[in-house]
Image 1: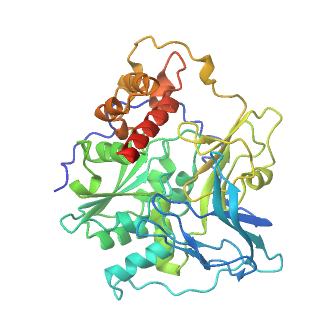
Image 2: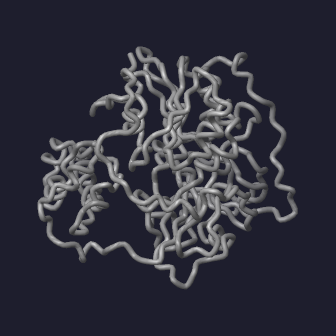
Image 3: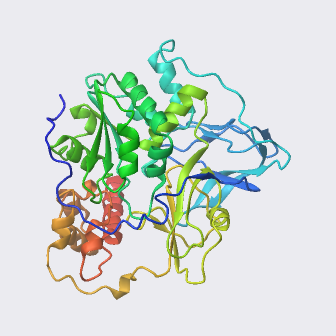
Length: 443
């Protein structure tokens, strides 16, 4: 049974960073030109890596399946361009890891048109076949987590969905790609929401949008009809997190240890929903995504529709390049994004932005001592005690970390944002999670 709806339009705790969205909020998206080489890591989703079904020397067509799911919690990969497979080998990606990847060289003489595909008649297909089609289309959550959509649509037999919630918050500062999707493809989003309702059996849907996107609210409200509701939400971070959005839109919070499906909720990012609609209506797999390239250290901030596997350096070049003042490039937003040590890494499905900054984040060695101010406790949306968790991580105490619910932390960085001593709390929380994971692996 679903939690009861209240009149509350935000969640408890959280923080209020400046949104820095003005540079791209009103910029219509544009397609990223095709480049010479694309690198597609086989691990682009939560769960198992994809398994390649091509080899070096194979010619592939744009949209062709080139890797199949490596398990139930896994999805396919598709060629973003027509061209030739030049290698399947480890290549660098954000974070510094070398991941097994399929490398494609673009055919410069190809028109790069997608082959014509038939729409999917969801009334004629049985549910299992339709879910397999979604899995083999490679659709995952495009808000950052990259959780396979077909898994989310496969609840346990004793669970069912009452409400679909579309996540249009985009609470990370600087990023506007979801904003532009809601404005430019509002009709597609409404149709996709209806599709999700049909697939889940839900009897209502809510599209939650923060009030700093009035044009998106207006565009969707002008065409939405009951039982789809467009709900304006107060601007707060991290409202785009699944549990926070449910609390903001529906009222009570999903307790720790429970999942949204336990209360009848399915939450989908706006971009993911539109990707599903594109699959159903045109047969298009997930081969590109909207990306915001922005920040004070890039020449021309833009919203781009970018083929998966495009290098960060190519996107920056298309946006006029980095300015001489550039000091840091982040894949994602400033709160949860990953600082890059090199720019030849590829765009993956879960990456929504490239942020170019003209100053570095404070180094860990520059942090002052904890002054027990409790601001991190007041900010944590999961009601954790980040300061205590960091002390336990520094002391190497995984058992106490588990008892203190470190697994509930989703690394939103609200604690680091408010810390007056500049302590890199999220850095230590990640170390704490690694300690608990290592302990469990040895049990």
